[in-house]
Image 1 (cartoon, helix red, strand yellow):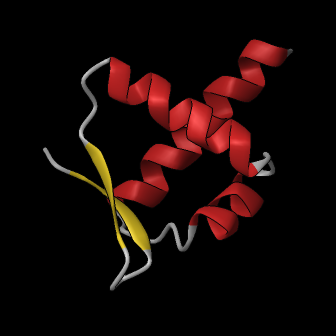
Image 2: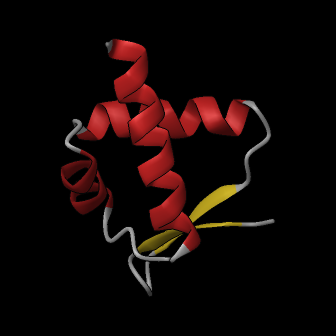
Length: 66
């Protein structure tokens, strides 16, 4: 069941980043129903796999540098 949840979180995260509609880290964690620490762990793991994800303070959203 845990793997299914992680896949769901990754799919939701991908969709929100693609739309530039994540909000702040706190808001994004809330949208994904995970803790802020878990969110940062997921982002760190994705970045370790060469995902180019950044955050813009002016727009309050994460975005992908593809």
